[in-house]
Each structure stands twice: as structure tokens, then as C-alpha cells.
Image (cartoon, rainbow, N blue to C red; front, side, top):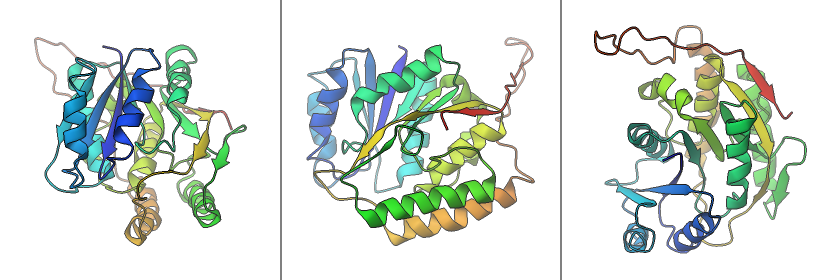
Length: 265
């Protein structure tokens, strides 16, 4: 078990079957974990039925109520680390992220020295297709704002198409990641950067969803604006490194340290 793609869902009945077929048809050994927040449209039931079509490759975790993007991914990260996956991916269900780019993110981590590969709209060669101008302006403004406040040298800090080496998720104290909306994406990259992991941005073309309804709202935007300020302030006091108990059985824990670097700008 090497690669797993985590896809949070809420009311994605129009997309979930197609996105699963697209991932598995790559024949690149990807497993998929769907985290469904009890979608009233039956998304979870669709996935449950498809598990018979993809035995041993498709997994489903259903949570009670709409609990937020960030907590869905944290749930998935812990699940994937416990199961022993070496590479853990984030991806949306609505085809705004092209499943064919999964292998490019994997290659960056497996063969190009990255600890964290980000599918970047703002790296050279990246861009948008059919995305409303107001959303593009909001996204670009959020990225610039985040870089100015946090000093984090990532061109697309709000990106949600990501590959993590398991060592990153094992080192970050996931219980200290508190944002539930899209600010979660910023905090995860910020935590990895602060801990010295190497981040590589891989250019992608982001395409607006064709089916279903966007989850963006004013609350998410507000969380992002205030959350970035909070991240910068807390950085003076907060350590994102997970504390591991030392035992006679496991011996001393030797946390590795890496030079901070970002590529693909």
C-alpha cells in the first residue's frame, strides 16, 4: 500500500462515480478514501455500492453531519498513516483537479526530493479554465496576502491538490491544525514549511466544476483572512511538531530535520 487519494465529499452525487472511475482508470496503483459528511443527496450510498466494483481499493468513512473540509482531511490523514500509506494525496471530487496530474505530484515526492508537492495554479505553466473572474481575483489576492503576512514562499498556499510523504503527516501534530475551511490548506503548508520540509510546486490547470454547487461562502473567506493573521501571530509561540513518547521497545525517537526550500516558482 503506497498511494492513497483522500477525497472529502458533501452532496457530490453528480461527480463521485466519475471521479472514482477516472482515478482507478489511471492504473497507477492509487487507492481512494472518501470522507463523506452524511450527504443528504446519497453520495455516501453511491460510494458504498461502488466498493463492490473496486474491492480493496476504495474505502469510505462516513461522519455525522457537515463538519468541514479541514476536519475531513485530518480524519483521512490519521486513517492513512495508521494504514501505512507512504504517499497521501488531497483532491477535490468535482474535477477541478485533473486526476491525470496525480502521477506528476507523486513523481515530485518519489523521485524529485519533495516532501510536499503542491498542484499550483500560480507556478510557471499553471493556470485556470472556465473559472469566474471574481473567483480568480479572490484566489490571487488570498495568495498574495498569505505570502505577505506569513512570509511563506509558496505561490499557491490555498491550493487543495497536494501530495504528502507520510513523514510529513507523522511529524506534524495534526491535533494542532484547527482551521475547518480553506484556511486549513494554508495552515498545513505553513506547518510543513515551519518544520523544514521541502515543498515543490507542480504547475496544474485548474478547471471550474461543471456539476454540483461550490462550497465557497463568506464564512470561509472570513476564516481565511483572520486565520492568516492568527497563523503569523501564533508562529512566535507554537510548535507544530508532534511529540512522540519514547519507550524501551521503540528506543529513542530521532526526528529528522530538512532544509527549508520551495521549488517551481
